[in-house]
Image (tube, rainbow, N blue to C red; front, side, top):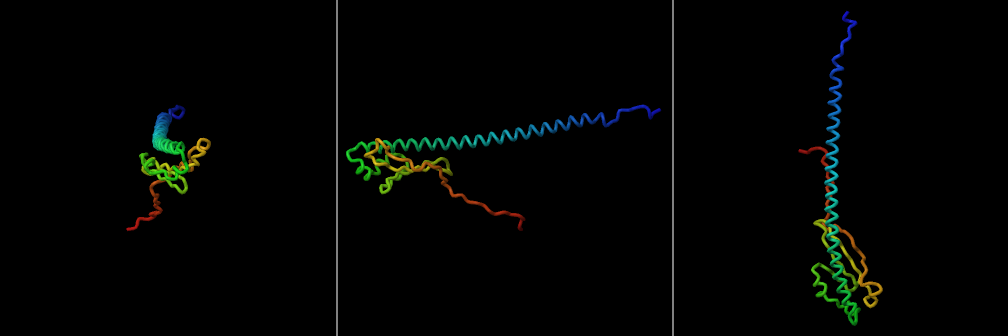
Length: 165
């Protein structure tokens, strides 16, 4: 008689609970991974935004210096003998600009650097055009507007495969 009587096995009662616990663990794991990924993306975006802000700040400073140099070259071009005045472009005019600007009279180039951060700088090189033809050609030509590294990069190629006492 007992053999004909059907009883619900104990496994059926606990299997739904185990399934719910497994699904709950899967959802918690997925939520943790999603949160970690979102936090990583936020940090990366913040670093990129900071880098762009530093770069565009340096670019603005370089543009301001370029405007001051343009004013000096415009004053020289409007003088009686612009070619002679350019050859004797005195450093008082360039030193009036509050920056480290180098003028090379042999090559007729003006160069300066604007720091972006502690590791990089914006390097600018201008070639001064013939100032007698300046209204048509402009006062200068930008030869280089480039981000450069100011710190030496040192590699660490050592690999410690086994601890050595």
